Amino acid sequence: MKTSTSTFKKTTSLFKLALISSILSTSMLITACSDDSAKDDKQASSEQSKKDDKKNKNDKKDDKKQTDKTAEAEDKKDGKGKDKKKEKPPIPVEVVTVSRGNIQQTYRTITTLEAEQDAQVVARSTGLLQNILVEEGDEVTKGQLLAQLDVEQLALEVAQLEATTKKLKKELERQQTLFNRKLGSSDALDRARFEYQAQQAQFKLSKLKLNYASIKAPIDGVITERMVKPGNLIRDNDILFKIVNPSSLKAVLHLPEKELSNVKKEQRILLSVDAFENKIITGLVERIRPSIDTDTGTFKVVANLNNEENLLKSGMFGKVEVVFDVHENTLLLEQQTIVTQDNRSHVFVVKDNKAIQTPIVVGFRHDGMVEVLDGLAESDQVISTGQQILKHETLVEIVGQEEQVAEKQEAKSPGSVAVNP
Image 1: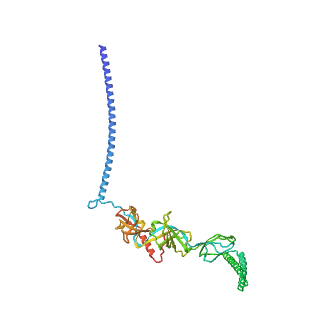
Image 2: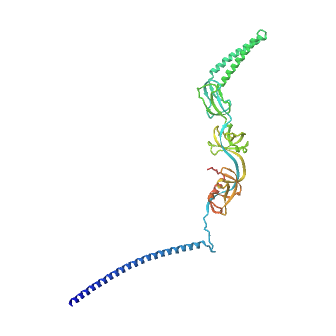
Image 3: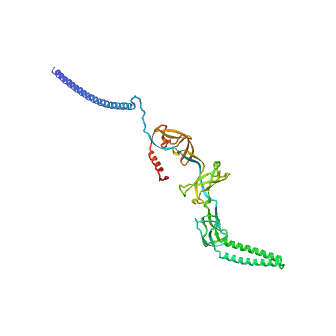
């Protein structure tokens, strides 16, 4: 009995311990779950807070955009509630004024100046060159003494032949007297006559050689070249000098055959050479070759030149314009103002501070100027700078006009001198 009671007590004690242990385990498990749940709740709360902040920021941005749109819409509306177009600032441009003047139609080509009167002075006698009296660049006249050969030997030959000629002349006279008196034969008279004539010819030839020993200018002109020096032995046909007459200079042109119908005699030409900048020399067409060179397809034109100042020299290279026609008192405009598209030309005219696109018809073109046949009136202001980016009725602002007016007034004032840039 005691044993049973003791056993029961032990069993009860073990049951209590097991129950307490189970309760403690359950309590710890509940505590751990509570902690995890708290962490999850805290994390979720943090994420929700971030989402709320982001949403608030986005809402603020949307409100700002809406406000800006509202303000922009209000700015675009005028007092009547209509939208206004955004106005662009005017484009600055420069203008030129259409004026009247003369313009010419020309054909431009190149030329080499040639002298029609030039001569090579050659020796016609033999001897040592004793003196040279002229130098290159000297002007000479026809018959002027240029150089002198040694004439001592030639002079002696002339004196000898002269004496022999006189002797034969007396013999001829004697035979003539005898024949007249019937004392001499006709054969003796003829022989004397032939000997005298032969000797006389030799005498004249020697005198001519003596005269040729003095080298003289065959034409008027300028010494362009000297080929000899004093002391040289000169023989027949040796070249001593070259003379060119500058007044006989011609401009020789070779024009394409398509221009044959445009070129006429007495047409004016304008010549410029590199040696004299900004100087134009005039001339007139003198001769036109009526045939075409089959190798080059060109024809030859020769023109006289106004070379009174003797500025031009033979062999000079020049640029020449043949003036085909001239239009006087016509409307003129600068080439740079014209815009060409699809073989059509137009300009922009300033009217009421707007660029008005205006088609035009052009005529002659020369030296940067163009003849306007139709489309413009005198004193129209045409845009000369910036017209490539303009459109019809674009707002523009004229700049640089005051300076142009000042320059014109200065050019018109007494004593002013216009200087080419």
